[in-house]
Image (cartoon, rainbow, N blue to C red; front, top):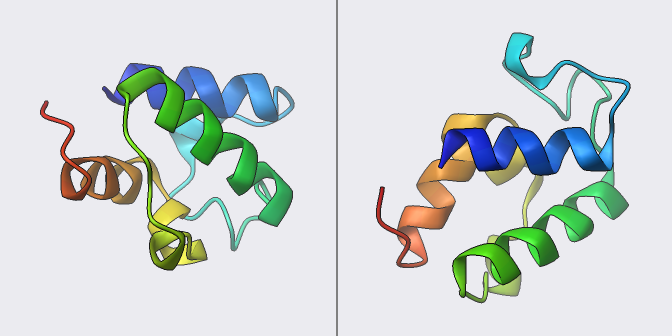
Length: 77
């Protein structure tokens, strides 16, 4: 699952190395438009629908938080 997340992040913002950051938002690697693109990719890949109330910067600040969000939405590791 982590590899897919990194792949999507890299497709959205290829200029950044997402494997070496602990906070994508604080480090300026993702903005709100990028998060929307990521949500669409994750929804399509995993067959889920991430609830709008969960689309918060903190849920997308690092790979672990994104994994936790996916698990909350029914994706299994």
